Length: 191
Image (tube, rainbow, N blue to C red; front, side, top):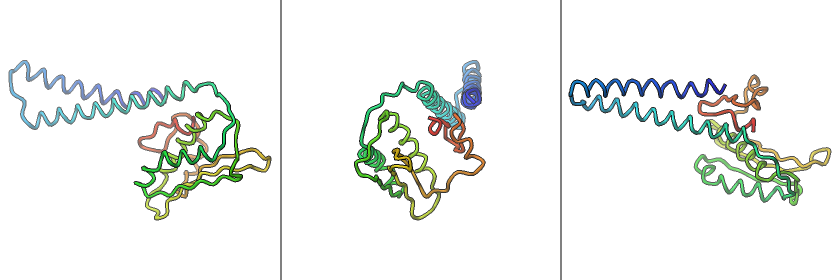
C-alpha cells in the first residue's frame, strides 16, 4: 500500500519534471523564445508537480502520525466538556456545510479514564468522516453521544444520518490505508 501511494505521487512528478527539463533543454540549445502556450503548459505541469508533492507530504505526515502513536497517558476526565470542545472546534465547517451537530451525555457528569489527547484525535477523525458522509440530504445531523453501556462502562459514539458504509467495505474500514474516498489516506479510522 505504501509503495502504491508513493508511486501514484512520484510517477507523475518524475514524468512532468522530465518533460519540462526536455522543453527547457530544447529552447536553451536552440536559443528560441518560449511561446505563451508553451509557458502555459509548463505552468500547468509545475502546478501539478506541486499538488502531487503536497499530497505526498500530507500522506507521509499522516503515516508518520499513525506509525508513531505515543504511549497512552491515561487520566480521568469528563466526557461532555470534550465533546462540547469538539463541537466548537468544527463549528465553522459544520455551519458552512449546513450540518447540525448535537452533544448528548447521559449522565451529564460521565467521565472516563483514558488518554484525552488520543481520544480527542480519534473523535476528530470520526467527526471528519461523518461530515464527509453526506450527499444532498436536507437534514444533515451528527450526534456525539456519551453513555454507560449494559456493563456500566462509558461509551462515546459518533453518529450521523449520512449515506453509511457499503457492506463490503465495512469489514475493511479499520485496516490501515484502506479508504473508499478519492482523497483519503485510510489512516483516520485505523488510528
